[in-house]
Image (cartoon, rainbow, N blue to C red; front, side):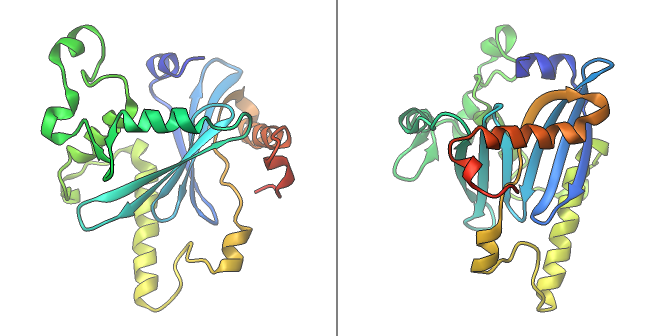
Length: 232
């Protein structure tokens, strides 16, 4: 099922969040019919990385590394369990959006993120092209360089944001007491880290928790490189 159809016809997923040894695991569940549910598993690697499924065999890990109080560098790591990633194609896609040597976005706040009212009227909802990276950039930067969180009105679908902020506040308190916060690892601990699992698929509604784990097991078992590694 194309993602565009999934989001259009099943726009209200149920969100579940659980704590893990690396941060948070987030489930977006869309019941397609009486017996089938679309399961999307994404992950927060505390404090500032995310592992997201792109397809049945590819994931992306995004590291958002602070540069100063108002900006971050964004590093993207693509992992393919099947065919090797086409590095040339990936690089060309990025260079179409970013300028070297500083990787400044070509479409940005100064040019209205490429907004075109004629396109919005006839082609796309946002009027900003079809690249989701541009949409994400606009959604983040349009809040302002430092957003006033006291004016927020969080809803039930923001439960992952709430869970993350609680983790962050706890880590700040632990660091203030001289304790070791979550995911501050030594070399031996870092070498033992596996995963996290990012899955996008359709499974049985009454056994979706078993489905996503089995889905990952089959994917790793069939991978020419992941099959040699211990399971997460």
